[in-house]
Length: 414
Image (cartoon, rainbow, N blue to C red; front, top):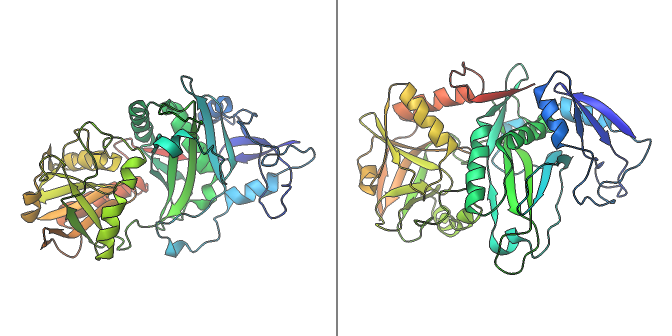
């Protein structure tokens, strides 16, 4: 039986029946979106048809005379019952995920919201055997009036498209990516933390899900989005972190994939990161692999050095991820009249810096309290410096909707 509920100005139509497994949640058939004067609904109506991509009868049974109106509305109109004051950066299972598939050489066209849960992959899937996968990360914030804000989602879409080209994968269009993010956040809006309590971390994935034995692009691809409420990335919160410079192991090489957000880049840093954390450091700062002298980035964030109110950060030349928070901080700094240099930054520059900070979607802006290089520790203070504190304040107030968005970076969801 088809039923409906209104969510954020969209009418959601769905088919469902009680799960055959009494201990599991109610499964949902794909949603279609009916217009209530919403451009989002018109676009998603085309992208979320009532057809399933390989969903089994057991996982998505169709039964007449069953509805989910009360369940769905209650799930999406009330805050989840969790300890919002104790959020860390750890995964919490939410309600829905978004899934869209595409054949090699084809285009993504049909997507659907599904109950969050495990997915099936062939043991011979390209992502499992050859690492053919990308991911993105962005956040949603809740304002005092209940409005939900996304921060520059089109930038994540563009970065995924660039990464997909490098990894020989098809990718959703920018519009498909952004609208899928909107739909996923709205379906999980009870998991968006209250104002000032954190954010909803959004994780889009693109992977070679088709089976392949010989080294070649996978025959099928899956685009998936899931979300999780999060607090601070580092256990220190906004307190300064302590880094160690790694001079033997390297994150990326010229001509490699360091400049795209492919999954293998992150597995490669785990050895050095684990060793650093075992010694009490927060994370690792990597050098270039050619000269072993120039700064690249921290395991999952970009690095900035401040000297005499001049901000320097390593230039993007193929081995460093073009961070969206990095790009935003540079734009904010210049709009505030600060000088920013994108250049080669030698490790010696750290020893003479006034302040150092990291940027990234997860950390936003994190002050660096100390950096250890070849046994020598350099300290920068016990909190934000003047420059990093100003940039942190301007950016986070914009992201959270506490100041006017003169940059036109935020996207409102109601």
